[in-house]
Image 1 (cartoon, rainbow, N blue to C red):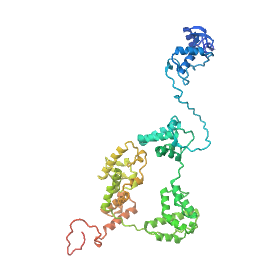
Image 2: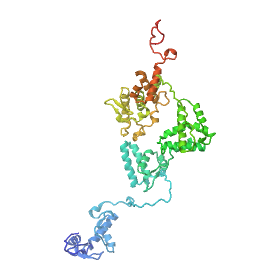
Image 3: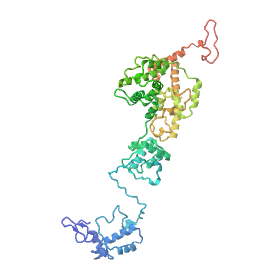
Image 4: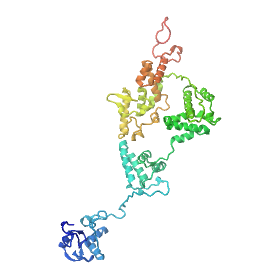
Length: 545
C-alpha cells in the first residue's frame, strides 16, 4: 500500500478493504487498476469499483489462482467458466493473495506444474508434548520394509550425522559406512522421543539383514538410545563356576570375588581377569571342602597344611596366596572367627634353570609366521625381547625409521637390520589393506582397523600357537642369550631390557649355571662344538677346550 503522509486519517479502500492512509476511495493497486479499466459494478462482489469485463481485480485474481491450482489449461476459457460459476462475495486480507506455503503462485510465476496429491510430502508438526506408552511391546526389526522408512525423522538424522563423523575419524570403508547407515534407518525410522532400543532386539533384527551390530551399538550408545540388556560375562561365569559349592562356602566366596573386582571401603579394585583366575586356582579345593563342610569357619589349619603338601612349586605358592586372601577377607567381614592360613609359610620357591631354545624350534616358529604381522611380532620378541602386550600397544609414533629408533614399553632401542625390513613390509601391507584407517597402533587387524583399539592378545599370538617357540618363549630366550653372551650380570640385564631386580637375578643365575656346568660329567648328552677334535696331551686333562 502507498504511504501518503502522517497528517491524513486512515480509511478503508473501497476495492480491497485494505486499511491505511489513502488519498481517496481507493488504494494504490486499485487506483492503478482503475486507470486501465472503467468504473462499474462487479458481477460477483457487486462493488462499485474499477472492473474489467464485468469483474473487479480481486475476483479475477481469485479465479486465476483457482484455475492454476486445478491444473487447467487455456487460462481465458477456464477463467470465464470459473467466473460464471461463482455467486458469492470474495473477501481478502492483506498479503494473502499469493500465500508462500498454501499453493502455486498466480501470474507468470504460477506456470510450474503442480505436484499430485500422492507426491506431496505431509507436513510434520513437532510438539514438545509426548504421549507415554500404554504397554512395552517388543519391537521386531527383522520385519522392516523399505516403504516404511522415514528419512525425515529427527533422531535418525542426528544418528546419521554422528555416524558420518565417527566413520570419517576412524577411517571406515564405504561398505562399513553403508551398513551402519542402513542399520540406523531400520532402527530409527519410527523412533519416538524418549524411546530406547534394547540390545537383544537390535542384534536380532540386524543379524537378520546381515548388518554390523557392534558399530551400530556404538552410535546408539553415544546418543543415549541403547538399553544394554545383556547379562554381564562375569555374572554368567560366576554362577557357573560356583555351582557345586556348599551354600555357606558359596556365599563367602562370591562376596570375596565381588570385592576383588569392585573394591571395598579399604581395598582397591582388581581387574576382572584377576578375580576369575583366583577362583579357577582354588575351585578344586573348595569343591573338596564342600563335600564334608558347610561353611568356611569349619576349615582348620590341618586342612590348609594338607592342601600345601599336595602341591609343589609355583602352583603351591599361588594357591596358598589365594587362600590367604580369601580367609583374610572373611575375617575382616566377620564371617569366620579365626584365620586358618595365619603363620603358614610357603617357603622359598626354587626356580628351575632356564634353558635356551633349540635351533629347530626357532626355525619352526619362523616357518609358522607367514603373515607380515606375525613376522613383525616374532622379530620384536626374538630381537628386542618384547612382551606380547608391548607388541600390541606399539604405536606408529614409536617407530622412527629415519633415525632407526624404536620405543618399546617406554624404552628407546636401536632399530636393527632384522627388525627394520619386517617393519617396512608390515607398513606396506597396512597401507595397501587399510589406507584410510585412523588407528594409531602399529599393528591392526580387520576388526581394529575401523576404530582405535589395539589388537587382542589372542590374535597376536595365534600364528605361533602350538609351537614350542611362542612369543613368550622367544622373549625369554633372547634375555637368556644376552646373559650368556655378555656374562651373568643382573645390572646389565636390567639396564638393557628394563627387568625387575628379581627377574634379572633369576636370568643371571640360570646363565651362570649353564656356563659353569661341567661338560665332562655327561659327555653323551652334552652339546659339543662341531669341528675337528683337538689333540690331547699326556700331561693335560682330558675334555673339550
